[in-house]
Image (cartoon, rainbow, N blue to C red):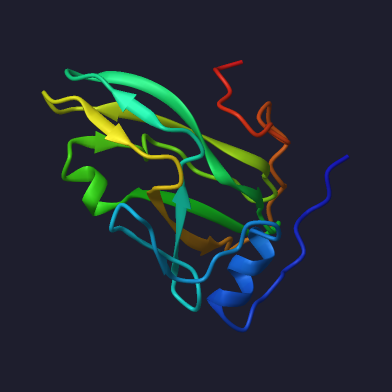
Length: 157
């Protein structure tokens, strides 16, 4: 039986991000691709690709996974947003994903190439920016089929 959420509060975004990414927390830094990575006391946190990705042109699709392992608090959820540098290449990596409260595991990232060019994305490169939102009412934790997702891309179940 699932219990309703208890309210977990944080004094800063830095504290929240450290709790969500216990094993993979990174403060703001610069990736070799030139893109910055987020963390620290910012309302957004950058998610990084684990694998190198080559996207062929004309609406091709692939799955990748995040370097970061998620442990989302019970009364918070995360909204992925495209990094503007990636979106300007014609890449969509946010693709209607919501990271639910209580989710544990690595994120499978659905990536679509909307451009007419082949796009190369490097392992370790920031691909998404997360926005954290606190649940306003008591809610049940995520208990879906992707809970405890492994450290690799996972196809639809």
